[in-house]
Amino acid sequence: MSVGRRRCVFSDGAVGFGGSFGYDWGQNADAAVFYGGWTPQLVGIEFSASASLSGKHWMRHQPIDSGLFVENRANLKQLLPANSLAIVHANDVLPTNADGTFKNFPNTDLFYLSGVEQEESILLLFPDSPEPAQREILFVREPIEILEIWEGHKLSKEEATQASGVTTIKWLSEFPGILRNCMLSAEQVFLNQNEHRRAAAIVQTRDDRFVEDCQRQFPLHTYRRLAPLLHQLRAVKSDAEVELIRRACSITKGGFERLLKFVKPGVTEHEVEAELWHEFIRNRGAFAYSPIIASGKNACGLHYVQNDQICNDGDMLLLDVASNYANYNSDLTRTIPVNGRFTSRQRDVYDAVLRVMRASIAGAVVGKMHRDWHHEAQLMMNEELVQLGLLTKEDVAKHTREAPACKKYFMHGLGHPIGLDVHDVAPTNVPFAAGWVLTVEPGIYIPAEGFAVRLENDILITEAGPIDLMDDIPVEADEIEALMAAAAK
Ligand SMILES: [Mn+2]
Image (cartoon, rainbow, N blue to C red; front, side, top):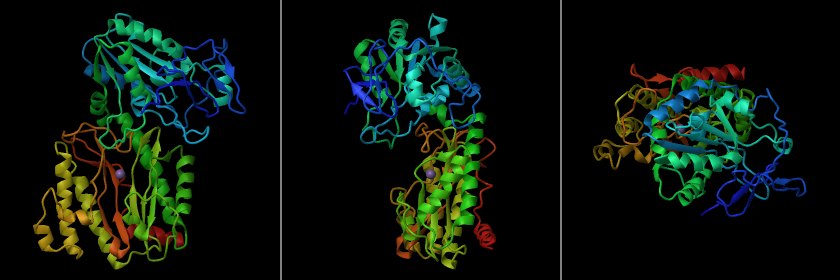
């Protein structure tokens, strides 16, 4: 499938595709402006005056010191062989129906290397260029007046430098010429693709289209994959990144504590969701992923996101809900009794899951392989499930890595790297290393009893052992009950 036709400069959410070229590089700088009803489509217009709104914040989060992105680029350059060119594109603003679009979702690789979230941006790195001005170039849309009238503020060159630390900022229209020039002296070209084990790559990205286009234009160059290098780098979080993740965790904590005061029999799952929208957004966050707010047996569906049922007295409510901040994610799961008191059975299952979570956090140490860490949790879970009367000793005796005894009740992974992506990129088949941030999320799902318990915290792996980034978010059953009881008074 290809959506690789020319993407016209758009406004007011309208996306236009046309022509036969791969990208909008803004080459049609002298073309006309077409107005169609309320959504004028601009095909690469050139205006002399820029209407840049200088000094305006262009992001909801507070500005990030560009030193983070300068360092990330420096680390990537260390991994590039001599005379390499590397190019990373923004994501498309994806269409919905009619002339609608999804909200712009920044490309996390581009953000990691530049701090830039604006659509259509391109980062070009050519560290060994004989031309110093070509060693690092960020291309952004030219903030012409009519674009800003319809879409709002776009980065000026000064703002792009301030965000990224890149000193050479060019308008997109200059990209084809500069690319050609750089290609003539580059040995190999590192291009980017979304390489993720679980990604369904059915929609072509701007990076994908560029891969095709660049290879068509320059077929004799050597092309290499940028993704493995970025995965290696992105897996290890710097102090600045951990601070941003901590801020996301702190917004999430506020959301969960608000729910402890809000949840009672009769509220609906969507009312619970609404509380979180308000809490996250007022703190400059947003849902890190589609929230799972699942009462009673709904919690046994792992990716239940309808969130449209009533929370009933006596049921448990599973909340897999978390905020991001500045594109960095947190990921939290808590399971609470709707009426504020666990039944003895619910409490037994809850405490079993909590023990496995605590032991798995302690076991997330430098040098351990993910699969071994997961297997240790499965062995613990087997024992807990026997205690709960859900498995027999005979079941456990038949346990193998390929067919874990606990799988009927704990059928998913134990956790995943988290960062700029919720299921973050990381090299596969390498042991945990200092600087990795992981989620730890065991669960027990019992459809026959109409409930499930999952608990999830985010942790930082260090040489001195794991640090729980969510150790201040209530999790003990007694504490949950006390907080809910205090709110009910
Ligand atoms: Mn998770």
